[in-house]
Length: 336
Length: 269
Image 1 (cartoon, rainbow over the protein chains, first blue to last red):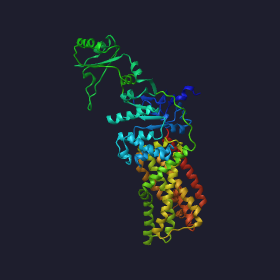
Image 2: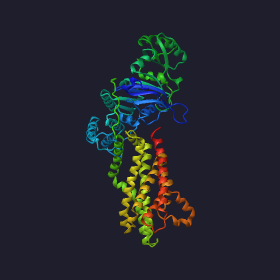
Image 3: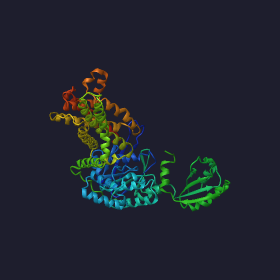
Image 4: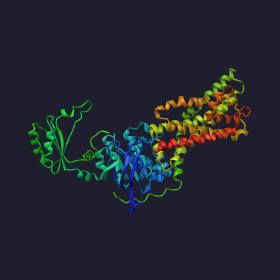
């Protein structure tokens, strides 16, 4: 049974499961979410969390083991061809056609999608112009930088006016100007009611662009809300980062944790760039306190605790939690 | 935001066929633009074989008169099979392996079987163009080629089945071979295929080397060569055309079925 509400949804995923043959666990393990037309939905998660597999199922390239995925109300398993007509994918790695110019890349993509001949030529020139690529229209993709390829791929994706656009790490590896440019284009798309589903590690990007964010790990959706609500959900309303002059033992951390308004204490380890860094024990103490209430009120008591343990306060950073804190809180710090 | 999406429109009739022809058009467009490279790729090898075995050895009296009549149908067979195979195997290895170019086609509004079908059809078209080019080339180098209008239907059947066998091999290899092993394709597949396909000798006469006759009987290309000999030089002892056609239909069906499966495995997780 299709619930009535699902008719208005651009993307709908219900209890989606993917288990690869011979894998001990599900790569995607019962994920559900939905996105409306014109919504920007960010899928966050560490490497191997199951984001790419989830997107793969939505874009008809991965066959789900169980569950339902719909694009514009179209079941991607039962009607993959109709689903493909609704969507476009911008991958992280260039998959442009290297044998033909970027203008032809756009034109042929539109031809595959049945856009009439005159319309596809006009649209290609329009998009090349909009993406600042008109002067390079006749060049082949081999000569393009990562950022330029990314722009070409977004332009290509728009040639058949998709309702849902999937972007995998859209600005990873782009220089700041290119990144701002891509963000602007994505906002314009959202305003024209295209639904954007983006996977990213970049928390700033997710916080800036996404209307809602789903955090995935181990194949499951751990949290799903607006970036603001996710940040608010973190215990405490502020953070206080303290750096002392010398290393210290756990007693100091415990003492800091016992202070009023401190919800949680996290030790921050500084990794040196390059070579082997000093071991955590030999690093000067650096902690982040998650607080309820104003962080500034805790500075003096915390300094006093350090002083009692014979440490001097070297640096203080006040802050409010960010999406990155949410991410780390949910998925942990271990490297994948 | 949060506008209510209108339900997705139904597919316009013919959408998938439009996608199919557009992809074929793209392939032909690229072939046309790179025609000199295409020519070099497909006719250089048979050209040299034709020149050395047909012209040079013949002029030096190292081959019997009439050998070119045995050789020429074999070279057409070689061109038909190898061209179709190359049109599929190398691009597929690259497209699935590193260029990922195939993704744009797999996401076009057509079934995955259409993407496979287009690849096969394109390989057949390339193969036919290459074999047709070999005819004037043969006339140019040898002075004349054996030709019988009576054998024309068999000739066409031979070229088509040869192209399909090559396409089947190409599909199979293109989806099975890992990119880092691509050089192995040459040494382990192309070379044995080239020399056991009865392209330079007629099969019945191999009786004198019985084990090699059995080996060649396992290569589908043998039946293409023999079928073309049956069409062009029926006075040379050859395997009966109907046997060739039956074996080839069987080989084409099997190769395409397995190759299609390999393609699906690469295309959809």
